[in-house]
Length: 191
Image (cartoon, rainbow, N blue to C red; front, side, top):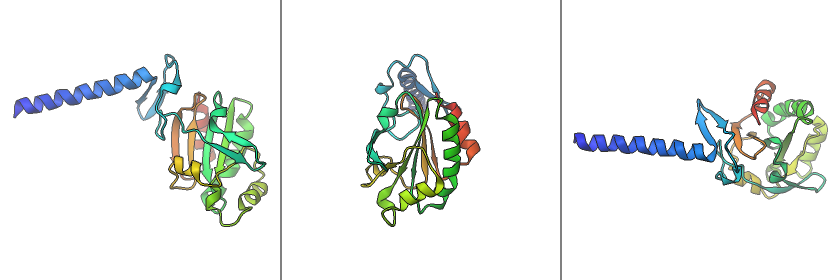
């Protein structure tokens, strides 16, 4: 019995070491609940695409309210706050003024906001446009008419936000409304 327990402990330790080594070689490890980026990360494209911290954010192509194409991968080189929202969502309404304020503060510092409207969940066509106009939002609003991006990002809570670094790597995911202080703190952490 002792030999079995010893062998099991050795296997667990080896798996832990291999796991941390592979993540370090990929350029990302989690320390203290925070993702740390390594200078030696040569190609973030080698990271897995997924929805967890340290994954490359899944790409999508939608159109904005004017019909212009919006592709997440076109924002590589900029830090991005990717937000999923709907006009009928009170917490979404509450956080949008903070997003607008911070967008205006940081837009000239290699930062952008993509606030994806989950158009397929809207009660009436035109609700999103009315919402954006009413709040005076100036950042990019991609329209997810078919719900594809929402599905790819497994959106179950409104709003849901991803803080994505300039390499396209997810650094933080938040379910629910963000206050201005938290939003700004996360924006400042993005490389």
